[in-house]
Amino acid sequence: MYAIIATGGKQYKVSEGDVIKVEKLGVEAGETVTFDQVLAVRDDDAIKVGADAANATVTASVVANGKGKKVVVYKYKRKTGYHKKNGHRQQYTQVKIEKINA
Image (cartoon, rainbow, N blue to C red; front, side, top):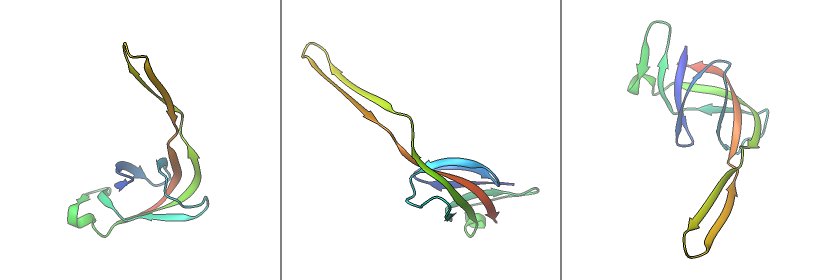
């Protein structure tokens, strides 16, 4: 059994027991979070999409909050002497999928 959820502007295919990194949710480690924006649910025999999966939810527990690897942003314009180096570390929340309620 798996579900496709949407959070943080992205879509994730999750099963029970999976550990995924999503955009920062603002929830402390150890707490539970419920994803109610479920796009599809696949059981053993059938798949539910659209209005059939509208009342489905996915329950997960927050494992940790952290920052991803550094991405270097380098801007450069030739012949003018312009260059600018900048870095960015995206914040994430690591969650473990506990239950898919279809």
